[in-house]
Amino acid sequence: MSAEYLQYAKMIDHSLLMPTMSTQQLEQGCALALAYDVASVCILPYYLKQCCEILAGSTVQPSTTIGFPHGGHTTYIKRLEAERAIEDGCQELDMVVNISQVLSEDWHYVTEDIRVVVDAAHAAGRKVKVIFENCYLKDAHKVRLCQICTDLKADWVKTSTGYGTGGATIPDLQLMLASVGPGVLVKAAGGVRDFETLEQVRQLGVSRCGASRTREMLDAARLHLGLPAIAFDAVNSSGGY
Image (tube, rainbow, N blue to C red; front, side, top):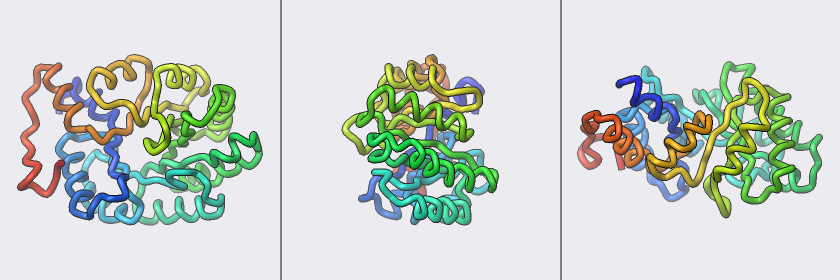
């Protein structure tokens, strides 16, 4: 893969989180991610172990969700989910904050809820993306969460689950980029559906995007770069959709 293409492909966390996806569709999605050499596959937790086997030996990282999609799991359960994901081979964990407690401004609870997942992941050499679900929050909540995640040394802050009432917006991404400290990256999720938007958020400084329209966006990126299309049979191969 060319370096120019990879600057886009390695922004993409290919999302396989729809609860209606069959195991065949999950396997196909993993194969598509391999063909396009994206950053990661974020997959339903029950299929994570199989995903790790499919991606083994590649540069595509296996990832899954913690406390998804509403964030209301107890901290104890989030820790168990993180430990199981790590045991199954997960390299990146996308966890949802306790939205209720953020809105209640119980910042001690919110901090400890994030801490247990970050600590478990970092102890195992894994990375964590902390999902805010910005559509439900005020700007002051988003800024405070960025500060907490900076203090806890989370690896990314992330706008959305994709299952709320809205996804990533340019103003939210700008706010998060301005509010995190050194070492904390920003991920957009929900709302990045075409190459033009992918390029726009890349120029802002966003390093990852959760996407289900991976093939369309990266085909457009290759066309933009004057590169040949990736040969991929979505019907007869073991992957694609």
